[in-house]
Image 1 (cartoon, rainbow, N blue to C red):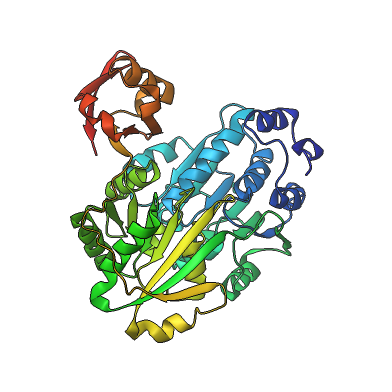
Image 2: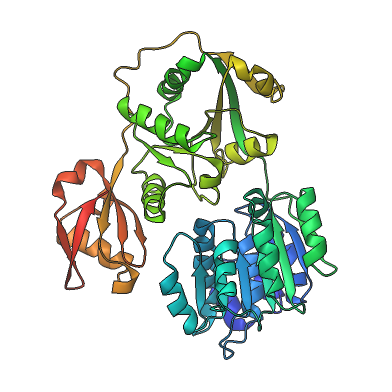
Length: 451
């Protein structure tokens, strides 16, 4: 693998990349970056985790004119969660110089504060198509100085029905620009889109780093009234640490999460009817291991970055092979073994047969074990501190107060997530009695509560 010093990058950028752990290029970076730096339009086929964000991030940051305080790059993402991840990584890479402003524009959060931020301008916008288009239509965002447009996870954006919004956003962009399209798959819709928005694009694809996930795939045929019982038996026998259960409807997500909670299985529901703050609460708890089972629809789960997931369950037969692949691909990552379970009724037998092949086991759950004593309780609970980035809180400050003032052992503190106005801390369940209703951090008192 080549070093970043082999590219036409500034010494400061190369030094910063080394400092933040980017020692050598991943295959997609090695293939894409030379063309990006030479200002070619690009179609790159690469999965999440391949290093694609750094590929386009290094490219757009290397071309940035810091003294020109106008929007020069726009990155469109399918979800707010992915946009936040991209923005965080870009800010890390941007540390090679001062005063680069990166702003996220996503739906589900208040419009007013975004207007205020835009009045002070930004160099780079990372956002979702709908919210970016809303700002363009209200003239609160200008793309007159745009020189690079990035479509990240373009296939997911098309799956979610963003094609019209994307095309409308592009209508506001200058014709003379560089366009980069990153996509895990390359269906006909992506080919059609690329023909209309890219100019003689170079196509690159990374294979070498994409070893298939090692996943055991099981299909269970059950009676409709035994689906929940079957699911609990699967949990009881296979004992996963954490699980995403996919349902096809929002109503079924809520009903199944309630049923599991009644059976002493810690479960939360995630779907598009949730307010953004509710969605944040659910995602934080699942990511920091304060919740063991997430029951979600496909659209709600887009952009989730959950590593080391033990199991994925299809509570309904997926609508397509592509959806099935997306779902189960969340387990068995980074060399770990994963498990996929699909539960279907006899009325869905014909749909299930479509998925039959030599590596998938088709079984019947006939011998149900006694699960009356079985439970799935989380290792952690989540403490919410009513203060965040706006209060200049850092992870070290929070950790110091929890171990010093409250007296927690460092080993009992898990993941710490700091947002603008709130901080979420995962704490071992056994430490719940130690928590107080407020905490002093940096000589300031903050209210706390348990999520």
